[in-house]
Length: 85
Image (cartoon, rainbow, N blue to C red; front, side, top):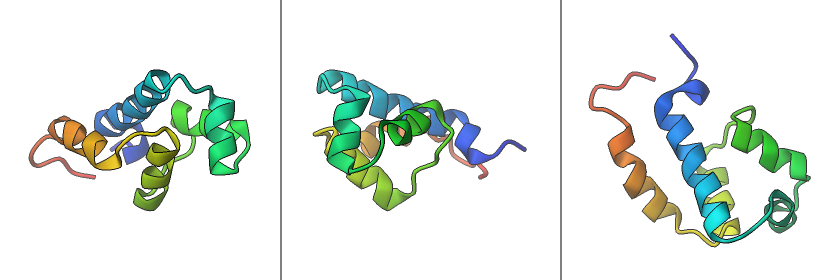
């Protein structure tokens, strides 16, 4: 069974963050600066090499000027009923 960092629902979460960054017209460097992290941190998150926990997701979304709750509500349909982690 694949690790959850590589599942379709997690990929959809990452894509939502990438889309939010694009909508905010922010570069990875801009987001990294807001997070006080190196640009490579944002890159690793976006490539799926670095998994975010829930608190990190909230902070990351806020750094994108995005509403973390709205992202989760939108992604709720990406996790099928009975999905096993």
